[in-house]
Length: 254
Image 1 (cartoon, rainbow, N blue to C red):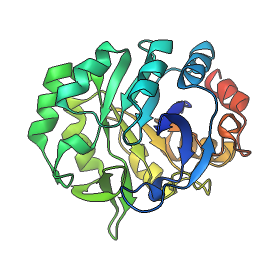
Image 2: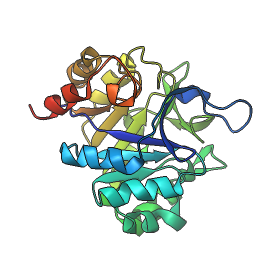
Image 3: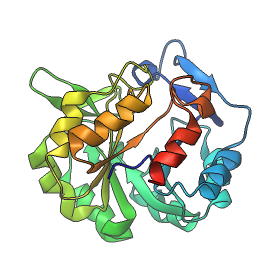
Image 4: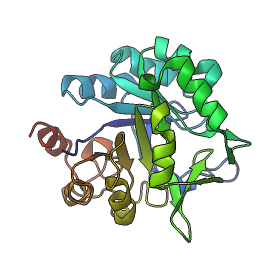
């Protein structure tokens, strides 16, 4: 059964919702759908009190260390942590209260060439049950390509069932943002969800484009209930108008 997984996206120390494709190192800042005046701890406590397990905190660039620690301290062992994770700091974040660590860019040499050696190294260091591999992606002519560096850099790794099979022994879960639709509230990437739903080796959380409860139901339908879903910019908790937070809490309690 598809579950809602909450998220706390951090940018410049604030809880925000951002259009994924606008995150860049240079030029104007990203397009912000929402900037909260509430603290990361406030959101973590709310998710804890409502029993929303399996959520994640993502640090989108520098300046988010303190905010991330605040969220983890509010719910020790209740949230995954991603953004800038590498071998050198992974265990530190687990000690800080992360239930698992989420990693993407560090697994690629020069942010482009996938390194199976690094996957094994990190998995052996923290344990496969503490590792979530982020395979967030962009569409390509033939399917989907994993994108790193806040979804700016296309890698040499194609996202397909063979890739999931290859990496499954080294992790507990996969997190997959459809970066091309992330933050647009224009609907999910149905083809991607359907493809992912054809695999059952590990738990997968999908993020990107969910605009209404119909999209949440569609994730369940297309995946046969095997894929969980994250909702961001359309959620009233984050200033959106498409989905009420209470609807998702009730959805998880079915």
